Structures are given as structure tokens and as C-alpha cells.
Image (cartoon, rainbow, N blue to C red; front, side):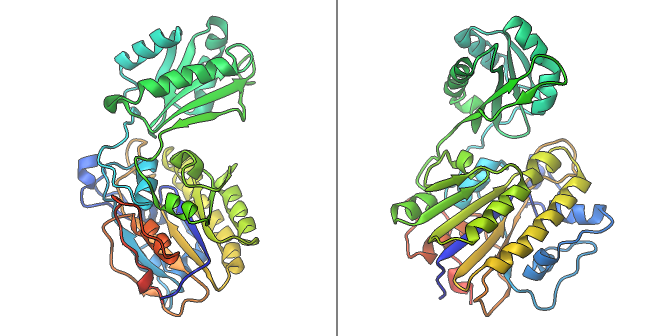
Length: 396
């Protein structure tokens, strides 16, 4: 059995590879994020993913399987209930989530929640719908500045977001209101994954800009994960992108914020050029946030091609004792109705320059294969109560 000094786990946020057996119960029958993207564009150029075995794993129009893939590949099912980012990532690291986080995309938040938030903050609430952060400011920021009302909105994710002008509303007041919202949304019927403070500057339409003083009030994982085990063993646990927010910093030794998915890959390439012993855990969110939710097939396809280019550079940086895992956390089929995530299986591609074998592995029943394999590589036991098992012994 091979053991690796460094493991790079890259989550292509929302890259599903076909409906789960229970997809119809989620309104997602027939969804296939990767397959439908390939079928909807003139050409999809992903030669590096192709070499690793992505087209061998999942049929794609215009992207042929390769005779000798360089990686192992299989599909993973989601054992947990739900199809959101936190559930997918938490399951990867061993947690079985049986109560899904709530989303309020179609209806906005219940009036009872809005009334309680208004009463406890002392603010009249405006908005209360699903919108992009830039659109909601153009629509309502002038009113907020003029009246002192508070903009509350959501998205296709499990989030409650509050906007506040840094000059007129004030950062401290914005944070205070978000802390109240976090407390209120701990109730099961209203439980969202994150409350997000969204500060901005500007005084009129066309001038509003969100600032870097954003603050996320996330839920901590419900139990110990593979990340905690790695950190406790003195290993490096380096995050890139949204991983810090998803786990509320639990089990991490270093965090790197990304400006985009391309930037996230550039950061990962830089990390590959330095010494560490442990895990580099990467989330590339633009696939989901910019293209999947907005049902933009062309944008998603272009993002995949840009990722593939950076993947080629990363592959050239990998050492003999490195392991690369590429996976996803849910689907978000841009050809599907609505704007929500889709209940799909996800890919599991694994590669090391030192591997002598390659090819198909049997489909697995849980995303938790990811965390269990990582822990096993470093000779560590997964925390009590977690799910998943290692496939390290299948890698030759």
C-alpha cells in the first residue's frame, strides 16, 4: 500500500455526474451537470481531466474516453440528506447529515423569522428574497441609506445575508445584527448554514461596492472530522477558497481566501511548490456561484476549460509522494429548471506520479470515502461516529 506525504483534494463545486437514485424526491430527476454541459456546447476542451479518466467515468458528448487513463476513477453517492455545500463537504470528512440545512430560495424567509429579527435588532427589514449581492444593492441600498432599514436576502445556498453601508449603517451595527440573526436561525425550522454580513460603500446607484469586511457566521461541524484528526496529529491542513467558511475554521492550520476559482488554482500551484506534510483542501466555488445557480452553460463550460489549463500546471508540479483527489460536493445542472443545486453523484478521480495502476473503481455509497482515505494514508483512525471507509489499498 502506497503512502503519500502530501494530498491535494480539489472540490470542483457542483460538478455532478448524473442523478442520484432519489433525485426525483428533490425535484432533480434526469439531472447531469457534466453530461448536459458537454452536450450543450459546441466543444468542451478538458484534456487533463480526460487523461485522468473523467470521460471513462462519465459519458460526455465530444469528449472521448482514453485507452490508458492515468488515474483511478469512480462515482460517489451522497449518504446524507440534502444537496448543499456544507452537507457535501462535511460528509466528505466523515459526518452523516440527516437533517438538511434550510434554503429559502423560492419564498424568502418566513414572516415569523423576519418579525423576530426586526424586533430584536430594532430595524425594519426590506428585501427578503433570493437575489445576487450586486442586484439587491442597486435595488434597495438607497432606501437603506435614507431610512435606516435593513436589507436581508438569501440565495440558492443555505444562507441569510444582511447588507449594511459602512458609513451610514456602520460595521459594528451590521455585525451586531448578524449575531442576532445567527442566534435566531439556530432553530431547526430556520437553520441556515451561514449568516453573512455584507458591508458596502457608496451613496447612489451605480456606485455601490461591497467591501472586504464581509464576515461569515457559520455553524461548526456537528462532530469531529478527518480534518481534526489530521491537525491533532501535527500534520498541515491547508485550505484554499471557501473551506474555512464551510468548516468554520475547525481542523485547519492555514487558510487562503481566493478571489476566483482560477485564483484558487493558482494558490494551489504555489502551495505545491513549497514543503508541507499533510492535506491541501481546495474549494473552487465559481462553478456553482457564477454559472450553476445562474444557469449559464457556456460560462460553466469555459470555467471547466480554465480549470483544466491550471490542472495541467499542477500535474507538472506533483512529486512522487503526492496524491491528487478531484471531486465535487453536489450537482448544479445549468440546464435544469430553477436555480437550486441538484441531487447528483460526484466524481472521484485520484492520481499520483508514482502510481503504476489506473482504471475504474466500484461506485461508493458515501462521499466520506474522501476523508477516510486521507486519514488512512497518514495512519490515523477516523473519529468515533463518522462514516466512510478508505480505498487507499486499491491504489497501486
